[in-house]
Image 1 (cartoon, rainbow, N blue to C red):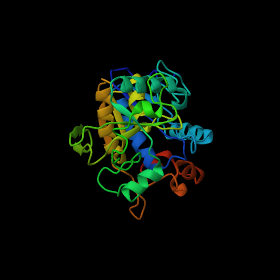
Image 2: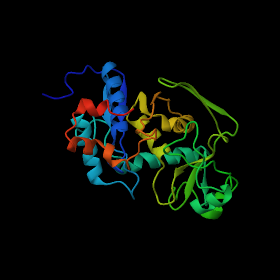
Image 3: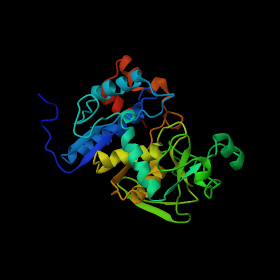
Image 4: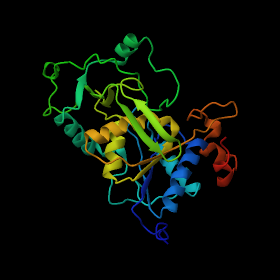
Length: 296
């Protein structure tokens, strides 16, 4: 029997979006379980999207393990790289044309500008390579950009709509001082101030890869996602993505951010915690319901 046949479709569309840069851990399991439960409770569709744009760290074996481990947990989906669907391909590395179309719209609207700053330049200008941890600290975070290239003559560095984004970093110009507010289905009212909590952020990298922010927004719109369920470490990303949706004239989905899982010492789980990976717990003989209840 088709595992999708028992679900009555509705307007709700959720998604699971693992990144194959390591084995999924029990924190991922709980967040993805929440996404699955919300989609099923709504009688809607659940989309599996493999976010493999990190070329240096993404591995095919981790992508395969993610699909296998989530299926083992009983978290089945209706569309994805293994089952197909009307909005494929469901692997980000195969969706470059969609991201380029979004870049062109941003460029034509005057929302973005080229940036020549390297990571080393950023570290030197800010005195540190990363923002200090705090409220809304983001898994895809970057330092608050000081605006060095905001007034750069784009033509002087060979930037043009015809040439596309290649060879340059591109940033979205944020409205400094403007509060970006949204209602989160789990965390309540959220508020971040552009230019303070985050600055002009990357939407395309000089190595030819779109940023997480741009790819996420473009994919959620193209796949008609109505609710984004993910970890609370991405709250600040939501503020950025609201600005991108506005620039691209896209409707925001609903947001639901889950509390982060921590280990016995209160440290946030990461993929380096191999002992707490779903794969390792399976090897030890743990049951799926035990894994879903393991994180604190």
